Structure formats: C-alpha cells, structure tokens
Image 1: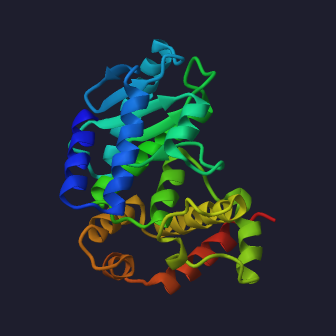
Image 2: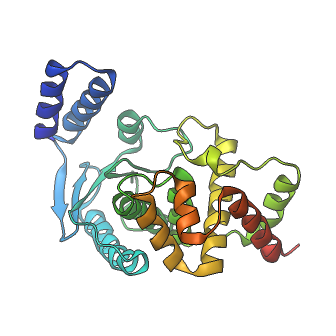
Length: 263
C-alpha cells in the first residue's frame, strides 16, 4: 500500500487527472485504515483484519477461501497467478472505506472487502459471501477485467449456490410486463442503483447465467470469459462462443424460467 500511494502521488505530479486523484485518495484511505491491522496469509491469499476480528475467525476464513479457490480453479479452468488480497472490517470501517451502497454486503475491487463485526467463526452466510466475492476475483482476472457486471454477478451468485427456481414466476411476470432490464443495460457498474433495481439486476443476471449453464454446461462460461478478454464487445464474444446475441440470450433466459416456474 505504501508503494501504491507513492506511485499515485508521482502520477498526480506528472499529470494531474481526476481519476488519478480519486485513486490516490482511495489508496491513502486504505493505507491509513490498514496501518494497525493484523495480517495472515496462505499460498493464494494475503489477509488483513481489524483488531476486533479474532485470529480464529481470520484463520477460518483463509481455510474456507483455500477450499473455494480449488473448486473455482477446476470449474472455471483458471488459476489466478498472484495472491488475492482480503480485508476484514468492522461495519463502520467498511462503510467509510468502500463507500458502498447500503445494499452491498461486501465489495471486490481487486481485493475482497468484507464486514465481519460480531462474528467469531465462519457462518453459512459468510461462507456464501466468501465464495461469491472470490468468484469475482477469478472472473476479473480471467477476463482481464472486461467481464460485464451481469456476467460477474450472475456467475458469482451461481457459484455461491443461489438458484432462480424460487423467483422464476416473479421474473416471468416482470418479463411479460416488459419490466426486466436488458443485459446491455446491466453491463456497467451497479453501484448507483437503488435497492429494488439492484435486486432485479441480480435476479435477472443469475437467471441468464443459469440458462447458459443449462444449455451448454459450465464450460460455456469459461470459454465466454476467455473470449471476452480479447473480443471487441461482450455481444461479439457471445456470438463467437455461444452463437447467439443479447436478444437470443434474453429469450433463452425467459424459456429457462418457464421451465423452472413451479407455480
């Protein structure tokens, strides 16, 4: 973190720029917050945690993440080449540092950032969050940071164990009313979305990813991520790997939900 702050300061002196200024401010917040944090590491993770988190919790999280790492490595046919950073916060520190919307339970901006206040061991809910956020690290690196948000969030939810069966009827009703977003609309950041719109974005993205996996298996997701890393657009990557476009995928998702609807 010291080196990051130093490099951003040098960049700001050489060429003042709003993005550089924002990055420097963010790095300085991280550096100030993490100076008193404890540390732990494994082969694949570098962990920092607030003093309010117990060493047992930190070790438990590292153990779960290592197991998740090997599972995702197999499913996505990819191995991240460097250690992945993980930061454990109090609730207030998480809000202050990440400035995430209230509906966000964790953040992955290159490092996994999770509030764990009050926890002494890895609960089932925390285990789901860890798998979800680690999936983002795999997808981000495999796609060279170019995977659209709908694919990121859809795959992350799928890997943590969520499925659309319970919400299929509601999603179909919304689709019939023309109220579901197009996947093009869900390519960029969701951080400015209100809570209800974010909930719909998550649900529709999961259904789209499930429809891809149901049609061609998890291998299609892996191949799509590889192609996104090099293709001019996500839609072109869809054409190259799945022989479909966004409109086709939207209709495929609706057909999948009809099959899953148990009403």
